[in-house]
Length: 90
Image (tube, rainbow, N blue to C red; front, side, top):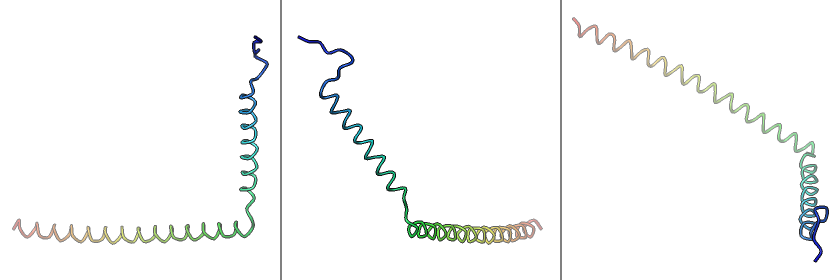
């Protein structure tokens, strides 16, 4: 019987290595194709980003107004409670 030395590879290992190389080549090719966006796609994506940013800014402004209304209502309620407490004390 002939023994397999470390420098030799078995047929199943050759197939595995070939599949591995093929997979890596296909992965590299697919990444290169996906990175090539068209100008129309880039413009559309930029427009979508702008819409999203505008929506976020509007939501932030609305939240700030809501916080101001809430703070004002809390202050008014506190004044009313303080006034009620001072009339009870007399």
